Structure formats: C-alpha cells, structure tokens
Image 1 (tube, rainbow, N blue to C red):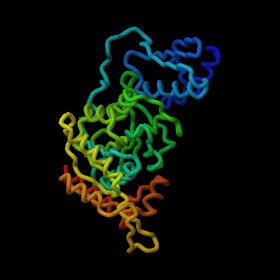
Image 2: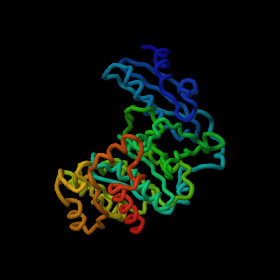
Image 3: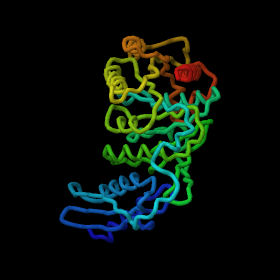
Image 4: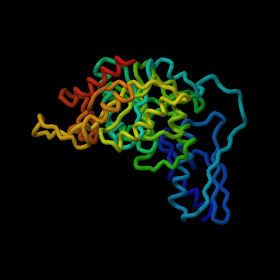
Amino acid sequence: MNEKEILQWLQEVQHPAKEDQNVVALGLVEKIDLADNAVHVTLGFPKRPDPLKNYLIGAVQACLYRHLPGGTDIQVDTVVKEPAKAAPKGIEFNLEQLREVSHIIGIASGKGGVGKSTVTVNLAVALSRLGYRVGVADADVYGPSIPTMTGTEDVTIEMEGEDENTNLFIPVEKYGVKWLSVGHVSQAGQALIWRGPMASTALKQIILQTAWGPLDFLLIDMPPGTGDIHISLIGDVPMTGAVIVTTPQAVALSDVLRGVNMFRNPQVNKPILGLVENMSWFTPASHPEEKYYLFGKDGGSQMAHNLDIPFLGQIPLVQDIREGADNGEPVALLNRPDSQAFLDLAGKVAAGV
C-alpha cells in the first residue's frame, strides 16, 4: 500500500454535481499520511465549502473501507484550501431559502418499516392535486427511498450559483412536486457511513441550501427513531409541526409513542398535526369489499384518542400502493379508492395548519 495506490482508489469517488469528476481530478486530496495500519487523508476545501462537502468526506471514508483490510485506522480530515477572503455576497447557511415556504411538516415515526416514505410521497402528490405548491426533502439518510418511489433515480441534480460559495441545489420537479433526496446526491446502492453530526449537517444542507421557491408545504421525510439527527433538524428548521405514521400492531405503537414524546418534549415543543394509521387492513384486488386486519385493528386510532392527537385516517395495505412505489408512479396520481385515502389525508393536513 502506497500513496499512488490510494490515489487510484480515490478516483472512484465521483462528485455528483461536477460532471462526474472525481475528488483527485478536482484537486481536493491535499495530503495522504501513511503509518503502521493507519491511513490519514486530508481533503482541501475553500473557506465557504462545496454543499456536498460532507457527502464527499463520507464517500472517501467508504472508499477506503472497501479497499483497506479490516482493522485499519482510517481518518479523513479537511483543511481550508486557500487563504481566507472577504465573504462574497451570496448564500449563507441560514433560512433564506425557506423564506417563501408557508408550512414545513415533518413526516415522522419512532420506528422503521411503517411506510413513512410511502405516506410522504403520496401525501405530497395528493396535496399537489388539491392545488397546493409542494416540495419534499428526503432526510432519511440511512434509507433514502424517494428517488425510487418517484422514478427519479437517474436524474442528475443541478446546482445554481456564480461559484462554489453561492451554490444551491435545484430540486427535481415531477408530478407537480419538487423533490430532493440524499439519494439524489449519492451513488446508487452506496452505504453512507456518516456519524450523527456529519449526517445532521448534510441533511440541513439538503433542506437549507435548496432553491425551493414559493411553496405552500415542504414535507420532510424524517429518519426513523428519535436520535441526534432529529433533534438537530427540529432545532434548526422551523417546522410547523409533525405528522406521525404508525401501523396498528402493538410493537409499532410502542415505538411510535417515543416519537410522539420527542415532539412533545419541552425542549422540542413542536405541534403534532395528527396521526396516520398505515397498513390498516389488507384488501385483495379480486375482492375489494373484504378486509383482513393483518396487524390488528384500530390500534392507531385508539392511540390518537388516548394521546389527544387528531386522527388523520387509515391507509389500507393493497398491492397497487406497493407497485406504485416500486414503479415510481404514486397511487395518489390515480382516481381509485386507495388514492382517495391519500386525498382525504391531504385535505385534513391542509385544514389542520
């Protein structure tokens, strides 16, 4: 293992917003230090760095983990590449890009696997069908599925700005909704090896350094759980409130309760706009009048009653919803009973704010 070999490996790390140039070609690799069973890479960025800085750090770490033997001590640090200059007038890491956004709603759950992203995508499409201007920020760093659900996996995210100091992401527009996901700025199938602070900063960039323009609703598809990513996002992004997604069974409800308590914690104190019960029952396509309560019955509605939370409705478990998500064609685009469930949900969310 030598410096030349490591530089060859690092040529695999592409910059998604710079015509597939890699970190070596862009001159971002400042220094490589080698020691016994240790590799230390230093990346150089301008004082006002690329919005994808944290993604590139994580991608370099992932590249080294792939090539180096287990147990190697891997460090990736950054330095200011050029002398400090007077900051140009332009984008600050602040709330400027949310100035024309009326309502920011976190779609959350204390548990993974409840269909939170499916609800987010179809709720966004349904709100658009009702005439609202809608955007979606996919903040689920560990499982960004919205590119697949919207058929935008192969879209190249463009950026605007005079230079790297003023760059903004340009969201994808499809189905009348503006979309931006961590999955749009990372390579397909790549595991994002990010610690909490790094992930929090990257996600705030996705939300705060995007040219959203005028929106009635910006939905944030939040990661499952109640960790530091959530606290950081809630603290720095002015959310109107949260919509909680659950499934009816007791295991899910116990985890969702933690999510509810997070938003109700005095240090967070964000309104809960309502609770949605997903996968409420299974209906076979050949027998639309039949209902099978695979995960229990009315658990979400009972929880909403007990916690004094508005109950926003029940979403059935039907094959078309799953197929629409896999095919990138949300079922809320159609005129069917399962589509109507999301239109009803959108109407209640709009009325609630």
